[in-house]
Length: 256
Length: 301
Image (cartoon, rainbow over all chains, first blue to last red; front, side, top):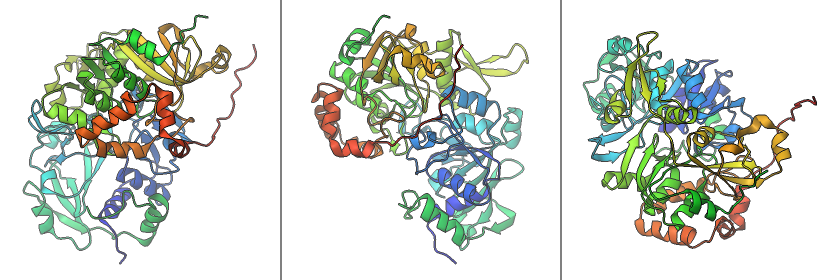
């Protein structure tokens, strides 16, 4: 079995969640690598959309920010900020959104705003950006994150973007067009919502244990009756990531 | 044709007043750093600084004491991490703030630019931003009976918009990421344009679909090559990602921030001096090659 770093494992497992033909709202870092990897393997018709207003980007180099000029050169279309959120996202033209945050809770709600009291913040985080609307309106949302207890509290301090709120039926009652978070890919395994919208452990990466996942989750993590083991990263996936997508190992070096 | 050409120094003196709500436009692209630096040099005070992404330009203006409040939707150093000065001032209780999601921020500008009393958006159910910011309201759609979220117009006293090229009157061509350039200009009371190139009106007329901003909403036109550095101008020079990473280090230490401002803002007369001071190695690093679009035929009629 090939050796790999934790970011490589996360990226490869996220890439496998994407389907050919998906229109994806991409973020920088690992989601960007995951989309490019999917495009070079099982999803050649993936369309990458960046919230800066770029549609069908084919970046020639790794972008540091979502507004990098390499996203524009050779893209299918560029539009303004209002159009990207209204015509593309609100209208329902986005299949997949990637989200991140400092906290993700039991029902997949995300905090990217503040730790502690909003008016007197202990830690002020960057805030919503596009995530409030992506979480509501993209058909499917995925989250890539290290598996740490402080990132997985029972309840988020501030609900920047909606998962299943307090129960799947609450999200359904809100009539949001998107289906909500579909998978949280961590370095230990994969969490997915059950029929109530509660995140449960559905997969472990090779060599990882259920106990590790439980110890690093802030609520009493339930385990699926159909727990599976993910396929290890293949030589081909690793080769594309290392040789084509991030040869300088800006995002893929381990140690996290 | 009435020329509105003036130096950036004069434009900031004339059109930016203490206490103004300022919108320096640009989503990562075309951020008018030279104008931010000129505002710092002129010691403007009590400004309300609005931008979807405050970026380093507002981090520097807040560090220099120009601002009493920020309005934003993503307060980070894009691709790097935290925006340390704005964050520290907020955490210390020294800086007022008002916060949105990207879509509600641009919807506010869209309302301002369209002369509308508010813009509606579909609900997101997240709830907490709406709870802490009373500018978010829910009303009932009179047609369907369903709730919609509304935000009021954002009407800056002054918008500063950087463009690739414009004529002396202010008809402006912009390409690449166009962010909220157009909406900021139409929403604002006064508009300062900075441009990489000043061109003849004939160049503008050769490609009217590329004109995002018409002259009659523009107050000042300033010829400021390299205005956007360390941000970028598509087709002219690259984003200085190295500096965005360096600022993460500089901004950890207030003494270093002061040294930076002394050397690179107060210590230079204008953008020409700043660009020369950056030196040939940086110029070389930020050079971009040519990738021309196919020409289009507007037709002779």
